[in-house]
Image 1 (cartoon, rainbow, N blue to C red):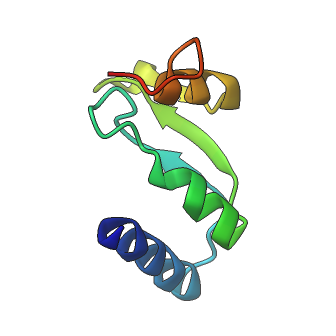
Image 2 (image 1 turned 180 degrees about the horizontal axis):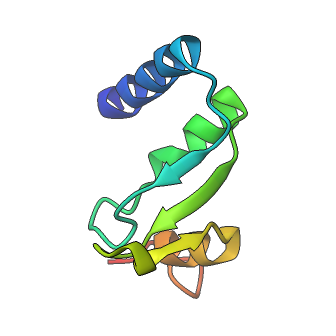
Length: 81
């Protein structure tokens, strides 16, 4: 919970310093899976625009909420292992 609150606080401070128009979630293929981005989007009303699915520029994709939920919870709505 502390890490999540820290991320929200950092995002809030960042939006106070610069005009943020969207979130780029890098390394969605990693093990952390980027779940905190949902809380940041909700708390600060910042849309998620792009995700990084690898290490190369061609691995950048537009954010797809359905794919994100499936990556977090798996195809049956259960937490992915």
